[in-house]
Each structure stands twice: as structure tokens, then as C-alpha cells.
Amino acid sequence: MVREEEDPKHIPMGIAQLASIAINAGHQVQVYDQNAWRKDDAIVKEILISDEWDVVGIGGITTAYASIKKIVKLVSRCCPKTLIALGGGVLTSLPKETMKWLPEVDLGFVGESYKTIVDLLNALDSENPNLENVKGLILRKNDKIIFTPQRELLHNLDELPYPAYDLFPIQEVYFKNSAMMYSEEGMLATRRMDINGSLGCSLVCKFCYHLGIIGDMRYEKNENGEVDRIAFDEEGSFTRNIRFHSTDYIINQAVYLKKKYDVNFIYFLDENFMTMDVYSKRTWLKGICKGWKEAGLVPKKKKDGTWDGVYWSGTSHATLCNPEILKIMAEHGCSHLVYGYEHFDDRILKTIGKGSNRKTNLRSFFWTLKAGIRPIPNQIIGFPTEDFDSLRMQMKAWDDLGIVTKPHFATPYPGSLWFTEYRNEILDQYKGQGKKFGLSDDLEAYVMDLGDASRVSAVISRNFNAVELIGLREMMMHKQYDKIDQYEKEWRQKHGIKPGQPSTLVDEDISKFKKIKISA
Ligand code: B12
Ligand code: SF4
Image 1 (tube, rainbow, N blue to C red):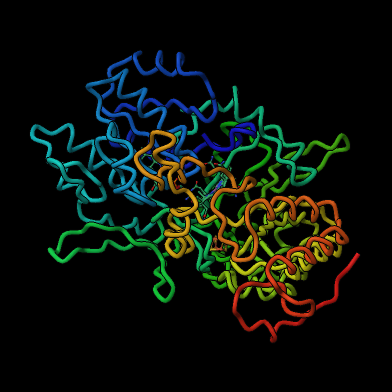
Image 2: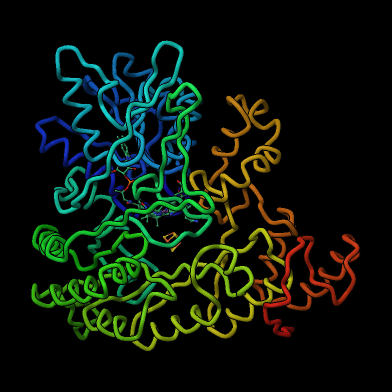
């Protein structure tokens, strides 16, 4: 389940694509979207026993682990003869661990599964299935957990069929939750659907995880030459394979959604629209805009605030956008762009691999506004070297931009560089929790605890503990500079750091970063 505290807003793209691929390959597919329906166990049981399933495939990202664990147990009880397969970010980030934690799961799909799904289903239909020949799986063999050979990525995304949107409750759930509180048009959207135009991002943010679907994953062998570990991007070894659909594919898909579902808004799920535009030498987004116009999709507002045509939105990047492309996007119906600014302190930004700084963040915000697009800034606090000065830099920027925001807490999600770096510290913080909650181990307790980072889970800040981060965020949101100053004094006393010294326990050279005096 994605964001239990929020209404379901997005069709799970990966599953929708896989369903479509499997149907095209001649298999019978049925989808139950628990994130959309959110029914209790009794209903899920009814669905599970309503037919005889050869395979039940379950997927999601790590934040869905707790609900996936529950569902896996239900499937195993209700459908004892059915093969249980798990895929998606949750399995791929920690494949061996997940197989250990969920003994009911028979096999896992590691990383991109477009080809793997067909190979697996075809193998199962054959007389003597040998799943070890199917690339991209993790299997149980005797008492061991083994990897089959690594699955290569699809070269040409345009080979993909459109997602099987019809298998999901579009009218009953998704259209009802079309509104997105990000822009006027987003709020007024009544028939919104999603498109994924690209996969990947060329940047290397340390908190980011690319689900093993953008060449960010390596199979590593032990001394016996057997693959026994999957590793992700680490400092000094970044591997990337970013891919995007042709503009024709995207326009045809948008026209299809308009004709078939009469959509009035399209949300591009892409990780980072702008990285693709730069990679395409600034042709991709212009191509999409040109196609939007030629297809008659550019929205025209009516007097009552509704419109003909289709507004759209996506993700941008502070350093990669420019006024020219933003203006073109606005003219062709782009209503809002999400910016992962994360922070406004150059010292912090320098440590996260985002390729942006305070200046580019502020500049892009105003460029976007000026173009007529609403910029939506994402903010994070609790970075490893976060200190009182950097927190004030965040607050100052919110004042300068005139925005109200509730920052997320820096979270080392499995698969990210931070997770690799801080794994032992995470385990320390969750020590004994596995046993306490009857789980396999402490790491499973951490994964069970992961939500959308608006709540603290593992803390990676060197200077602040969880209680301090929650308190400081509260004061930041209420612009209580004086209270923060006051707490800083107490904090300095506690840690023996004299006034005038940097408010940090971390030994790093911060002298080269400009200090701005900020107070109430
Ligand atoms: C769109 C999106 C969202 C949407 C939700 C979309 C939805 N309902 O599907 C929203 C905005 C709600 C969202 C929220 C969040 N997201 Co998000 N999101 C994405 C994004 C950009 C695209 C997802 C997508 O559709 N990908 C494309 C499809 C094709 O990939 P896919 O679904 O994984 O499927 C492929 C494979 O994984 C596999 N597969 C998947 N499922 C299954 C199932 C089976 C049975 C099989 C066989 C195979 C399989 O096959 C597919 C084809 O290859 C990804 C980044 C990315 N690269 O994907 C981040 C990402 C998934 N999100 C992430 C995060 C951290 C979050 C938030 C926590 C952010 C926050 N701080 O609030 C919240 C989580 C909320 C919560 N409580 O759970 C992380 C996940 C980290 C992790 N360890 O799992 C990602 C990877 C971003 C990142 N770069 O770090 N997100
Ligand atoms: S810019 Fe966004 S998508 Fe790219 S690595 Fe950073 S957080 Fe991930």
C-alpha cells in the first residue's frame, strides 16, 4: 500500500505494464489493486479463493513491505498450490533478505521484469519447467537461495505496450482522486491518468534508489564464483543506463488516453524529466510540446475554469532547467513541476550528489513561476552533517520564496547509497526490535518501519537525534528562529561546543562555505 494516509492517486505503473505484456504474450491475467481498494482481510481472502491461480505476483516499493508481508501470508494460506512471486523495489533492494523474511514467497523478480515475466510464464507452461534458465530471478533451491543470471535491460522502451489501465479501478477510485494539490489545474483535474515517459536519471543523489532498473545494479560473486550478492551504486562506481520513449510514442499514448478515457490531466511519473531533456540535447521536451500541439492536446481554459485539452505535470531539476524550455512547456499545458531541491544550504547540497546549489534552487523556482508553471519544492532535513546554521538556511529560503513546507526526514532507503553507507548504524538503532516484534531480524524491523519519510525512522544525522529533529522541524515550520537560537545554546552546552564554533560534532572543513547571518 502506498501512502496509507493519502487517497490512492496513481495506478502502479510497473504492474500495469507487466499485466499488459503478459496478456499480449497469451496469458490470462487478473489484477487486484489493494492500494486502490484498501479492503480488509476478509475481502482479500474472498478474492484469493475466487479462482485457481497458477501464480500470484505481488509488488511494491520498500515502504509497502509491511502490507506486502501481510498479503503474502494471506495468499499462502488461501492458495496453497499457487506459486507466490514477489517483484519491485522491495525485493530488488534486498533480494536475499526479503526471501529469508518471507519464506512463503517461492521466487522473486530482480530488477526490470519486462522480459522476465514472459519467460517465467512461458517456462511454467512448458512440460518440464526449469526456472534456473529464466534470467532475472531469485529462487529457492534445496536449502539455498540462488540467483539466476542477470536480466539485461530492454533496449528500446517503445517496444512496450501501453499499461493495462483497464484492469485497474479507474472510474471507481483513480478518477475520484484525480485532484493534485499542486496547481490550480492540478486541483481541478477530474480525469487524471499517468504516463511514464522515461526510466532513470543521470544524477547521483545519495538518498535515491533506482530500483535496479536503470543499470544501477551489479551482481557480485563469492570466492566460489557463485553470485551471492546484489550491489547498487557506491561512491566511485556509478553505472547508469537512462532511457526514454520517443516523443511519438508519448503523444500517441496521450491521444489514446484522451480518446479512450477523456482525460483532462496527465501526470508524468518520470524520475527526472529534465535529465532526459539534457540527455537528448534539448530535443525531447520540445518534441513532446510540439506533438501535444499537433495532436490538439494543448489546453484552452473556459470561463468557468474548466478546459478543453490536457494539462500535464512532471519533475524538473534546478540546474538542468532553463527559462526557454520552461516557457515552451508552460505554453503547451505544463501546470506544475516538482523540484527535489531538498536543501538550500550549499554545504549540505555539496554532500548529496544533486548537482545543484542554493543559487540554482532559488533561480529555478523564480524561472518556473515566471514561465507560468507552479514549482513544487521538496525539502529534507536531517542530513548527516546538518547543523543549526544549515537549518536556518532552509528557513531563510522558505521566507525568501514565500512558501510553507513540511520537510521530510533524510531516510536511508534500501538500495540507496546511504543505505550501503549506514547499514551498520541502522542496525544499531533497531537493535532488539526484530526479536521484540517476532520478526526474522533487526533489518526486517527497520524495513517494516519505513514510511514516506514524514515520520522519523533511522536517523543518519551526526548532530541531532530523532527527538531533536522532530522538535526542530516543528519550530522551523512555525518560523520560531528565537526558540531555535535558544535550543542551540543548550545543545552547545550539552556537547561542550563554544559559541562562535560551528554547531557541529562532525569534523569537516566548512570554512569555504559562505555564512549568512540569519535571525528572527
Ligand atoms: C511515481 C513514484 C511515486 C508515486 C507513486 C506511484 C505509484 N503508485 O506507483 C508517489 C508520488 C505516490 C510516490 C511516493 C513515494 N515514493 Co516514489 N517513486 C515514484 C517513481 C518516480 C516512479 C515509479 C514507477 O512507476 N516506476 C516505473 C515502473 C515501471 O517501475 P516499477 O513499478 O518498479 O516496476 C518495474 C520493476 O520494479 C518490476 N516490478 C514491480 N513490481 C512488480 C511486481 C511483480 C509481481 C513483478 C514480477 C515485477 C515487478 O517490474 C517493472 C518493470 O520492470 C519511482 C522512481 C523509479 N525509478 O521508478 C519513485 C520511488 C519508487 N519512490 C520512492 C520513494 C522513497 C517514495 C516516497 C517514500 C517519497 C517520500 N519521501 O514521500 C513515497 C512513498 C510513499 C509510501 N508511503 O509508500 C523510492 C523507493 C525507495 C525504495 N527503497 O523502495 C523511488 C525508487 C524513488 C527514488 N529514486 O528513491 N512515488
Ligand atoms: S535528481 Fe532526483 S531522480 Fe535523480 S538521482 Fe537525484 S533524487 Fe534521484
